[in-house]
Each structure stands twice: as C-alpha cells, then as structure tokens.
Length: 168
Image (cartoon, rainbow, N blue to C red):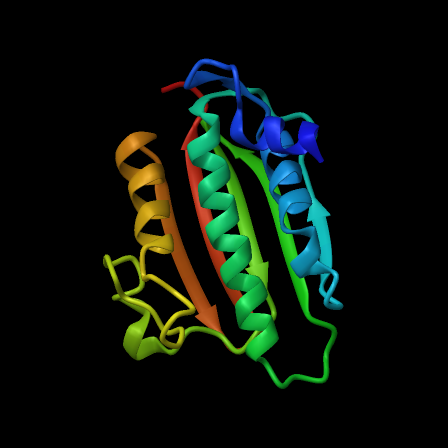
C-alpha cells in the first residue's frame, strides 16, 4: 500500500517528467480498490505500445481519480440489472495519447452536460460532492497539459475522452 501511495503521488520525484500513462491509471485503481469491490467490473483495453509522455504525473492521477470515482458513484446510483462496468481504453492518435474512461451507468442528462466542468457544479447531495472534481480535471488537462477533455453520454454509455500531447 505504501508503494502504491508513493507511485500515485509521485513522491520524491520532479513535478514534470516522462511518465507511463498506464502506471498512473493502475495506481489510481489500486487507490480506489475499496470502492471497486462493490461488484464493479473494470475492463482495461490498453495499448501497451504507447510512448511515455511528458506530464505532471500526480496531477494526472488526480484527474483519473476524479473521473473513475465519479463513474463509481454513477454506477452505485444506477438501478440497472447489468453488471456495473468501467472500461479504460488507451491508444495513440498522431502526437497525442487518448484515454477513455467509460461507464455503463444512467448517463449525464443533456440539460446539465454543458455545466459539468463549471466550478462548484455538482449533482451529488449535500456533503457528498464539492463540485470541484471535474473542474479540476478540466484545468489539469486543458490548461496545464494543453490537452483536450470531452464527454459524451447516454444511458448505459458515459464516456470521458482525454487527449494529452506526448510532449509538452
């Protein structure tokens, strides 16, 4: 567990460095393991040929945490009979790395989708969410890494797509 925390936080390492995107995703899954044990299946489709990218590793792990934790919450709120599932896909697109985090929960209603990256916007009850998770994710990806963060959603398929440049 101590190693997982050190890997997750990039403790004792420079803020900007060459990282393996999969190591960060796996560290995040270890940190959230206690929540994933609630019957959620995680399907990984990783392109193991991806190059390392120049990035702020601990900040990216915060993004993965916010997105995966939100997916877990969405799946917990779902009344579906299907097995709750989170898929994580990675692949290269030209000079960027694409990471997709997908859940089969109830989806994000169209009328609020344009607001989800706004600071303090939350759909969670009082005391459950601060409304900062997706805003922080957006800032880290778009502003800090000059990447792109998009969402598409319908019932059974909510998909966050993160594109990060290979070199900052």
